[in-house]
Figure 1 (cartoon, rainbow, N blue to C red):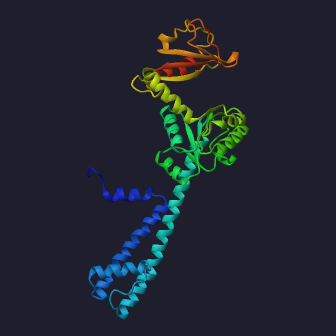
Figure 2: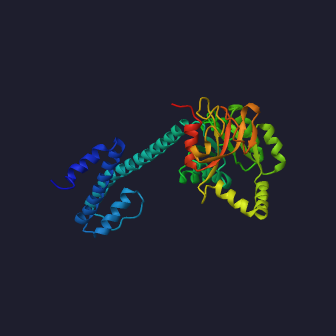
Figure 3: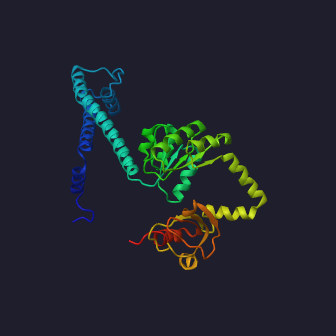
Length: 352
């Protein structure tokens, strides 16, 4: 027995595994090549033409281009041309139609698979607008291993989304159906990076009505529209121009502090990140003080802030070791991403 098996048997097995549509296209294409070969050979035998002239005549007959005959044809040659046309044109039409159907079916299948992935998401983020800001936000969410869906209606941005292999919904974010397709009712956060403040205001109103609990972060081009977005229901409004100016001032006034924060926030050379972890009911940390939990040694992370839900989301910076951790509290921690993941799974989640 050959090392690679019987080629004929392997070819037969491969053919059997093809679906019906691909099998039909393969068979029709093979028949088409046979017709081309017969036509080329026929003109060679009947008319005595060179091979290239016979091939060209067969080609223009099958494709109905309508050029004049390559050379004068005899009566037998004309009947042969009629035979080639009747046989081949139907095959060409069949191959083209079935290929188009298969391509359309493949697109529909990919669309169904994409929507199934979106429908399976929970506590994900929705990014409205995939321009320069939206793409940067998507990169950061992907880097943080957070699931998200992009909404945009521009073909160019959707093509970029496809190239980046990211989940998306093409449509107007102001439409309820578009937000519903993106899973607004199950989303944890909505990030608005649309090019116009009026659109961001309208989407905020719509999304807040559809999901009262979703966290909405909105970008504003004009800082004077901040209050409108907040009144519409946004939890946080960012003006990139102001953030950029603040960052530039930070760099020039405190360059070393800025370098440290940049490394931490971007998880660079220090391999650290700042993250927030919610203490769930019945978690092992619930009810313990920071000192009792032996937090630093057990999780190799630093608690730089604590949000006490029982006191109206009051933030305590650099909490005292005697501070007691209660369920529902949110810990702002600095540490290695793997250790923060361990803290979230083992310390802040109820035991299985």
